[in-house]
Length: 280
Image (cartoon, rainbow, N blue to C red; front, side, top):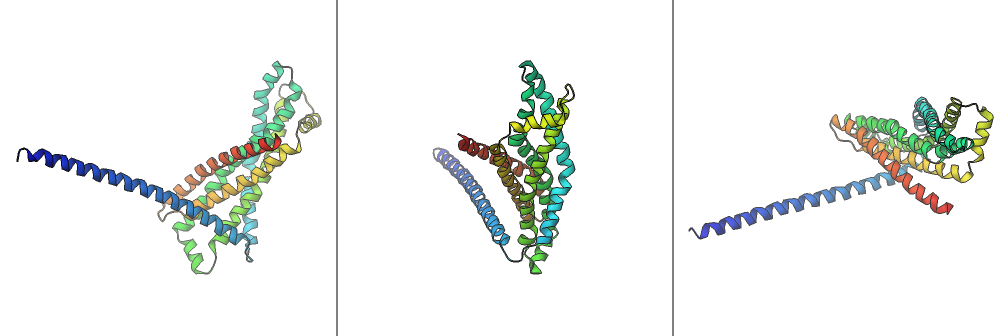
């Protein structure tokens, strides 16, 4: 028996190790399965949105209400953000240009920086925080209180009424907010240039837009539509698929902001690469 006990211990140890390895393998398999299931759910969600977008019974009234909520209600925040963008960029850049004797290039530099990159990206990130979290929280609370289930029982399509209208409104309104932020950013740049200088309004704007080309504006506007679609999709998806508990509302709003901001940056990287390829 003394010679046999170590063998039993070794076999027991090997059995425990194999159990642990099998448990790890099962856990990894479940994670991979859940990941693939989530991806499939996202594609099915997008497919249902596309299908309901071209349906006959489109909710125009709800669509215009969402445009008002997303567009008009965001104007104060976008106004402050856009003006400060141009003001800060001018104050930071002017001393460097003074050292090189290139102050006359300041309006064009600020205009191109705002129109190409800073205006669309910062405005989209602000909207991801305000609009995306609002969609996630609103739809999440409707999910928790079973209002979405009640709509399905009453023969009302929740995808068409709740999701399609919000996604299309975000896709349409965010490019308009980006153009509005760009205009206020150039105005803030003019105000910043007059803190230590004296430039007329007409001269500053003529110098700014003399450096801006059509290919500077078009890619920025096009990618702004994708920013709006991504923010709307993420916010609606996280809210529509929220859990049943009250904590899921906060989780849906938080994850909508985080994932929406991350996807905005990823879309911007892709758009910059495509634009660079078209210019070269």
